[in-house]
Length: 431
Image (cartoon, rainbow, N blue to C red; front, top):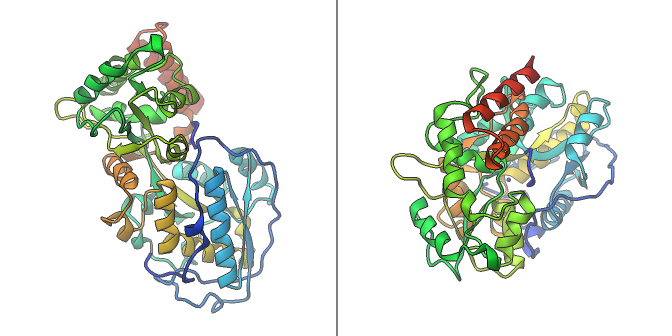
């Protein structure tokens, strides 16, 4: 995602090491520069749901590298999962932390030097597939995609190719400090009453913590019928009246209660320091919330008046199969075995939900009443939301959109003119 932020039925093994891990996610990116080496020999297996329990049935053992850019606690969990998988199968899973995953994947994979898999949200799917960075594993997978939610099924496919397997969803929701707020507001009007009560900038208190980048703002741009980008028609909607209504709604209802610097870190800080009753943020924020001893509740985003509903962009976290697997059946088989196991393993998915607020995309867990409270809150926002388009042209939308909004927020441009100009800039990049 272009932002500061950086998501089942039986198990191959009886337990996983992740359940013993303590700690939660942070909001910062990792900064390791280690570069793994790809290796492998053939193997198969993993998901007992559809693939069967015998990981050795389809060939000899294999090894693969999985690139990721996870925060520290999530990194430790992934490493523990890999150790469990390796100890219970004839395969070897090797997670490797990469500081700039986009730069690494776009330079190493075309050179045939990339890892067999990498871990990222679904928004790179279209661009990476069309650029030849991904491998279609449709005919080789032993997991039935119907075990995942429908949005997750769609996220891992492009032009009929299955290029990844999904394990979690994420989006933004409303986080509230229980020492200041008794219960989550159902409407923006209710929320405003609380923000008014606490907003006192001269004494370092604010009504709201809310980073204003394109991803975070999408809920309101979509709320009144607007849209950023229609990938079915390759059409922009930034200057549409309904979309502009959403941007204006942010300017009128949220900006007055925020710190002036609407970047991620300054906004996050006021909530983490106990200086705001509300934050609009995602599950990746929960680790810092907990480490700051804030008793926080999680809820879906509040509704504007009338029939409008917030519809935030949602993302699906997935394990991508890279084109380096082509012609290397050994590494491909081992990669598939891990992806199938990891994305359908009850212990792994439940622990991810409990420890990191990951929203399950496996059908059975997604509908479970036993999900942690935080996950249920974010899950409600996911159910309202809309997946980020995977079309390659979507990548050109984020920057001009944010520039236009900031120019209006800072008083340097009028709303419609700013977004009309943004659309012109975006289209020029498509030509």
